[in-house]
Structure formats: C-alpha cells, structure tokens
Image (tube, rainbow, N blue to C red; front, side, top):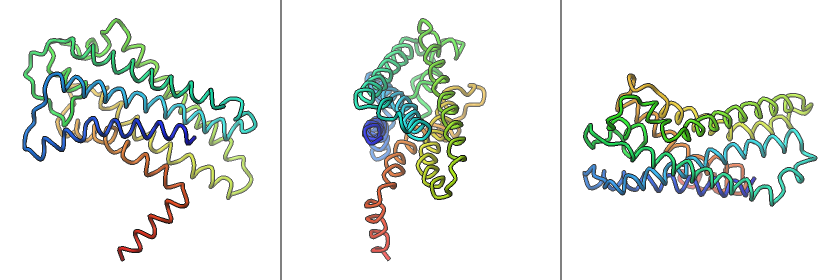
Length: 255
C-alpha cells in the first residue's frame, strides 16, 4: 500500500504543478495568456497524471480487496514484482491516454476564437472552439481509440464498485465491532476520494454542451483537478499516528 501511495503522491503533485502555478501566475500578473504550445503541454501532462491516478486508484482498490477478502493470498497476489508491474502499467496507460487525447484535441481546427472558459487547458473547453459540429464525434474520433479508453474507464469503475461490494460484505461478517471499525476507517477515505474524483471528472467530460456554463464548468473541474489531488496525501497520511500527534500539537500550540 505504501508503494502505491508513493506513486499516487507523485501523480497528485504532478497534476497540481501542471495547472495551479500557471493559474496563480495569471492571477497575480492580471493576465490570461498561454501559448499554443504551452496549452498543448499543459493538457498532455494534466491528462497523463490524471489518467495515471485513476489507474492507481483502481489498483489500490484491488489491494484493499485482496487484503480484506483474501488475506492469506496477499503475499502471492501482490508481491513486490506484481506491484511494480501494476504501477508500471498505470503510468504507461496514463501516458498513452494523454498522448491520444492531446493528439486528437489539437488536430482539430479552431474557428470559434481562442478564449477558454477555464483556468487551465481542458479538453471540453478546447473542443468548444473547434469547427466540428458533433462533440461526441470529436471526443471519440481518433480512430476509435478514445472510445476504447472510455470503455476501459467504465470497466475500472465497475471493478471498483464490485470490489467494494465484496469488501463491505466481508466486513459486515466480522464479529468484532472494533474490527469492523478498523476496516471501515481504512476503506472509507479511499472510497470518498474515488467518488469525488470520478463523479466530478465524468461530469466535466461527459455533460452535454447544452447545459455547459462557466460557473458549472469551474465547479466541476476544481474538485477533480485541484481538490482531490490536494486532499489525497492529507487523508492517507492522517492514518499515521505520529503525524496525527504532530498536527494535534501544532493545533493546540496555536491556542
């Protein structure tokens, strides 16, 4: 789990560093400019880190499923080599996902101006500026690869839901209330972050253009692009007793 948390922390740090510094720079200097190449680079790296994070969240769900439902097989199913292979697959899938989306998005001609209604370069906002008439044809038009990506993302979501159903069924059979509380305290933070990340991300990318508005787009983009990566390290690290004691000393010291 700590190995996967390290990888998750790297993706969180990468996604925040891709979007927030540029947004802060534009805010401090009262500008809204970004170069075409800079926008393409920002989109690629953002999709790279976000796609990798989604894969890692799915793998971490599998880790919890094995540790709770099949504890005697944990060492066999999730050895060091298996964990390294799964982490490498997560980073590779994130890279491929980012490459396909970026190439597809910036292959479209832009004929509706060059002003994005967002604080960073995001696929739906760029597609609004394209000359194509159909949003879904644009989204899935790169030789069907994006449609395959959407199916894989949905498959990961179904796997997460199925895994947690099995986990909760196993937890409810634990006779000790303390044991149930321990397992729930381990799983619920991960489940909450997965739900926040997926729900806002799916809505941001799959909502119809007819209901799109600047305020709604911002409300959906901030949770999955900034809030979730920022809260992940805090939520997972708060299970460390030494860190919790240090935070408590810091809080009590202020008062």
